[in-house]
Image (cartoon, rainbow, N blue to C red; front, side, top):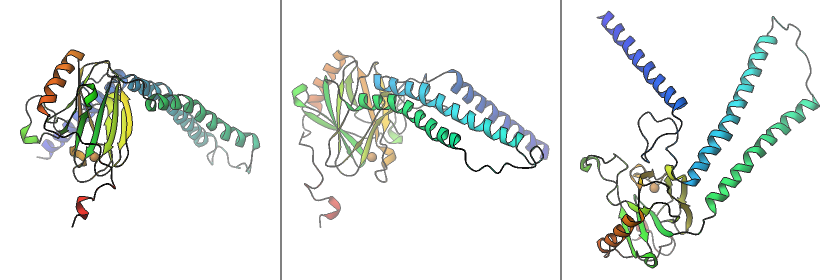
Length: 296
Ligand SMILES: [Cu+2]
């Protein structure tokens, strides 16, 4: 009995080790090669970038932040080891009583400042690229609601409708659907086009996020925020609300289908009929209406 249990434990730890080795190898050698626009089991790195902004973010992280972090960690580790080895009680019985060293103090102030400046330059450049929306090919209005999203396509670009996009409950999932990510009506956009996204909210603060696009912007009631993306590849791309917004915060996924311009035109024509009855009222701002909880 004891033997069996010990053998089982041995097997478990072997399995765990194999799993860790796979994860480590995946992290070291596969880079960020995760396609499909959604997280996958065992994934260690980012989802694959499919927009210029996401590429820039990955370069910033992989080639500027990571090397600096690793360098600083190794330097601190080396200093700690040096102290342990050279200045322990037996190796160095009479400790130095030095308390100030001007050169050293200037160095440990100036060096970190220089490192921050090195980080700040590409960081501000990336922020500018994210925040300055280039001339857009189309606009999509995204409204966060407790607990789903609505997507509006303006009339002047062939739309003129708005529809709700809600999570498919687990019991209704079909083969190919992804639990907690698939929705009933996804937003559709054409590939290779600059999509200007207007983001607001109807109730509380939500956050519109699609990792593969490298976008995240808060959806704030009474405010119109904007972001943009230009998807380089067709496919389904998923995100999740990223601001704690209430009890079903975890159940309001975002899903965008990127298709060819022809397929987009077809979808737009179909969607116009399908969602024709949905009103496309103006964005409702907080303060213009009484919250439901206060309507007594
Ligand atoms: Cu939310």
